[in-house]
Image 1 (cartoon, rainbow, N blue to C red):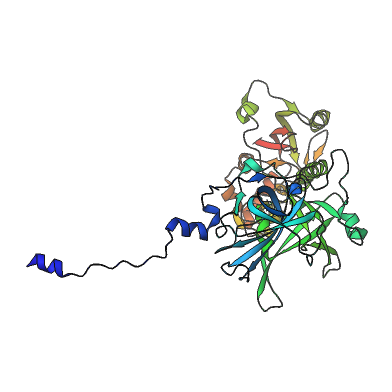
Image 2 (image 1 turned 30 degrees about the vertical axis):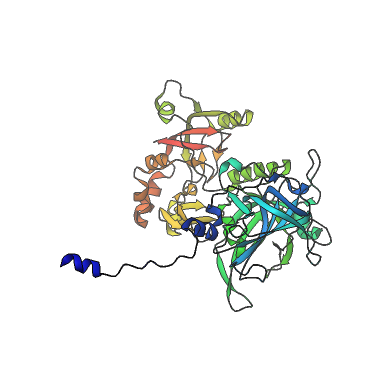
Length: 472
């Protein structure tokens, strides 16, 4: 009877498929992840060698401008949207319209992309002329089998396609001007004007109401060179690009920027469809500005990161060869050859302290994320970029230090955590948890105290006198 029941059960019906395998569906929905094994052979070209017509070509370049649009078009009804890219290598630039079937590509300014396509077109007659752009490409990876793109995010490709357009070795870059010259008069009537700037600070992402009734994302980036500062407004698509930029380090070459008048009446810069933003360009002027920015950061920054592993602290304190310096001797030693790496002792008197003042102002701890941030806690989110910051003790706690030959101004020393704990005789957490009365007593006890500081100098990496330890 059991066998008859089993025979009487109806067989399970399988759902009819659509004729595509799971791999084929995944490749169509996420073209970046598909295996690219083209049957035809693609010829590699630089962008200036590309010409209009049907031909299987591959080329690479860095994104210097882009826009993202959502919706379908009559030509590609299956697309969810498209990117309009301006891509350049060391020779020329090309505009690329690349459709995406599901989600937009993770495009950022400065990212290196390799393209494979079977057709290059001339620019449409009604298109806005852009300096250096003479051809265009329309691609739909995942839908058109001859199209494919690859985004390079590894460090192995950092040196590729970094040279500015029309740069000639040994000659100044055409159209390049200082920031002050651009803001005063260079923006008016100068074709293909260029400014070379360094990132000073990156603002938090804001949402601003637009004319369509929705909201647009905005990120303000403060830029500087040796002549001035300016604000760069990055809207919508560009809001994600500054995430990888570093204040005081990232260099930008902006070609044909948009000049704007801000509410304050000062000049600012923006991005138009013809603007090109080279991230970390490679040419002598950029290298000079990079060194200038590093030197300025060393001189002005309050919260430099303490270098670990540069000096042998035990040997400096208890070794056989221990050097003692007056401040005048230390100054002569550094000025004679600032690239030395050495350690020694100085004997100084604390002439002034601001411990109680900073405690009351909630400024005992500090960090620098382009804009100084203060608090009386170890960790705090940056009010500018919302990143979690790890704070260190404010070097302005210790005021002027004096010996018989000279003095050190407040905030000019770079203290290690070990040195702070030896000076106060307690851990960092205990220092910031002091009450106001205890802070007053601690300041009164330490004022006019004479102490030995174990110091180290490394002109190549830090360029500032570092305090390795403290002996009272």
